Each structure stands twice: as structure tokens, then as C-alpha cells.
Length: 185
Image (cartoon, rainbow, N blue to C red; front, side, top):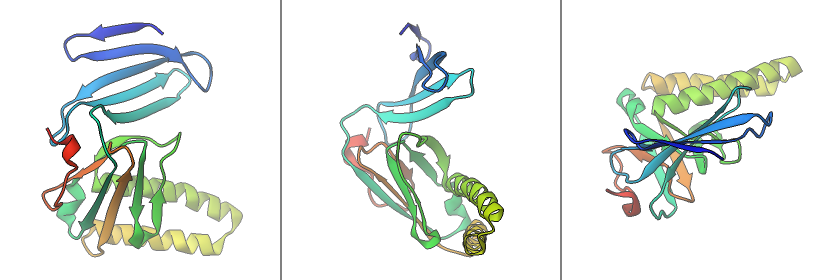
């Protein structure tokens, strides 16, 4: 691996091998400054073949974290969500669970962004269900989509749950009572 450092922002760039095509993969490590957290690094790997990887890492000693956030109004849609690749996302009212894994992607967004990601997954599932003529699955997907629309209008309440065994994820809101102490600056 080769290494270069940009001292202006302390970004480190490494060259590696793409797991998809075997060509050169550039991996960039960038420190982030986020409220309530210390020592966060954003990791982004990209290759000319189109493969990309994103992750967030809290470099301080972390313990597992779990956040439950009640989305009760349109204002709650703007609440910041930090999700690492080791985080499980649950929305029980929608019957949605997104598990961590080798293809899980990290992101920094808000509650509305999480719902948009779920909608994108539903679009793919709908296409598959339509192709297969699976009426039950189509009906279930339509029901979940309508609930998401209602959440965005402030007409349906949900609970957004993040569970991260390494403590690299969070929901940042004044409505939450606790933030894991190990990550407080």
C-alpha cells in the first residue's frame, strides 16, 4: 500500500486492491468534527469499476450503544442520524430491520434520509414482487410505503432504533435522554 497525507485536513489516502475487479482502490481516511463525539474518522474507498465503500469509525474506546427515537412530528425528520456499518436499524411500526454486514454502508443523514433509504429498498423489492406476481408482497410494500408517507406528513408515529455493538452510531437530538459517555467530548 502506498500512503500520502494532506496536512491541511489530516486526510490520509491509501492505495489498495479492489475486491471486485482487482484494480487499484483508493481508500481515503478523513477526520470529522461532530458534536458529542471525539475522534471520528470517515473512510471512503473508491475504484474505477464503480465499487465504493463508506464507513465511520470512532477511534476512542467504545462500548455498545442503543438509541430509541420517537418520531412524532415533521420536525423530528431533521434529527441527525449517524450509522456505521456495524449498526442495526429497526423501525418496528414499519416491520423494518436493516442488519449490519459486509455490504452495510455507513452514513450521516437525518431521520428523513433513513426513511428515503428504506423507500429505495422498497422500490427494488416492489420491482421484484411485481415481476414474480407476488400480490401479498406487493400489498405489504404498498402498506409500508403509505406509512412512510404518513410519517413524513406528521400523521404516523414511528420509533427509530439504532443498535451498534461497537458504539459507532448515534442519534443526535435534545429529545434523547442519554448519549454514551465514552463518546462525549
